[in-house]
Length: 80
Length: 370
Image (cartoon, rainbow over all chains, first blue to last red; front, side):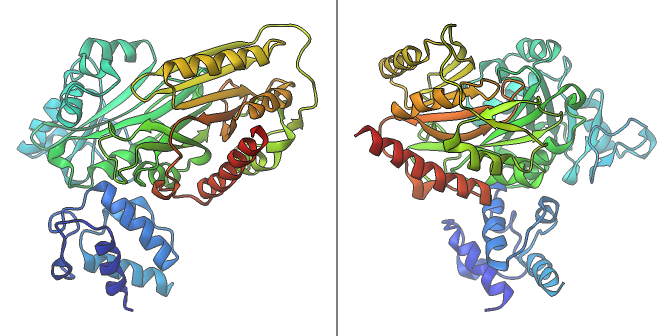
């Protein structure tokens, strides 16, 4: 499973009623498109840490506005 | 240039001549120290000139129902600040409207401890990263006088991860797990829908602990493990019986809305078994659900005190570092429905390990009573 597929799965696992699979494009903005708040972003971060086996800084979370930027972040970290 | 209140990635306030008209109007709402956050939020220390906005922020999120009532009264907020019990900051948006609030305040028996809490984001900015930006402020030790402090603690709820993650990612250490401490129905952000909400006690330490402390044998290993990331401590085994004389000295805080009663025991006297019996009776008449007793580890009799508590159904919650200046050993009992463990969100490995230990300890004391 690719990084973006894993992230899409994690976002859907949040079980937010306003989010459909079709909305999860690379350009989708976590806050403006998907309406995730700080609690949602933190939960997503926790599950992403478990999935990818990485520790994520709070600073990094606030610098990932889109799904594409999150994919780029995790791919870069995994390559290190 | 005004020094930035907060270090790290937040930009210092520019010289007046570099401010845009938009930023100038926001600066006008700020008095004293000020710092720019992402998306043009500005974070300023609360004082007489802006304390009225504190109530606005809480009212937008909680109506008139926030249990700490002084937040609604500017004069009371200022009094808390002037009397050294509260340090607070407000975030303003580019239009100069109050958008969020964080604070540290004194609530523990040890007056040199600060509690981090009451982070609020107004509904208009709920779907932004302002909450995360504000949470990072707790790690800025210019927010409160660290040099005069033994430490900063917070009790992160287990119905979501935000508070726990913020605490861990900014250098705190998880030390205790307080089961079913809060009422789930009255908690605004209860994402799990549980009837009661547990809390993780997280701590960061700013001074060296006293040189001597005691632990009961039954909890020595787990407490030493929990305390390992903190400053070095010397724990001796508690082997002394209860004292032959002397009166137990304690203080307490009763949170009626949560049905939670917290008791801090400074000194254990010869009357300890009677004290425990009376506390249990009073807890029952008050309808207490979460009963917590924190024992002073400076007491050599703590081992025997714990034996008496366990015989009455109390089990471990964990360590409350520097609760008395010396550490506290936090014991708890929960009445009523069984804890919804599967709805308890825990972030750190320590918190998860504590839960396993506490569940076993709880089962053990209940088995011994039957």
